[in-house]
Image (cartoon, rainbow, N blue to C red):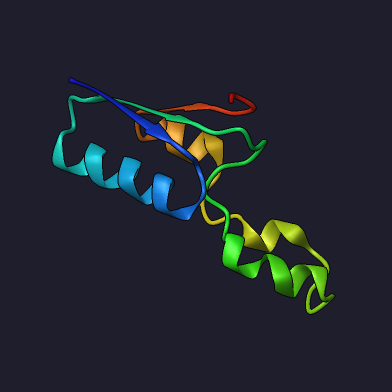
Length: 78
């Protein structure tokens, strides 16, 4: 089974991870227009407001971490 998820922010990343846990043999792909996946978009206003300087704190899980778990990431796709 192939599962295609459009959008790589928190909800899309969570759907991909859950799909892979429930169906370990599934071919799971995330397509996102962004450069990064699994970041906390809810935290963006705090970053813009200057509450913290390191935007990397918004990233929950890296592309490499997803790929190690068998989830294919396609960034900068629209």
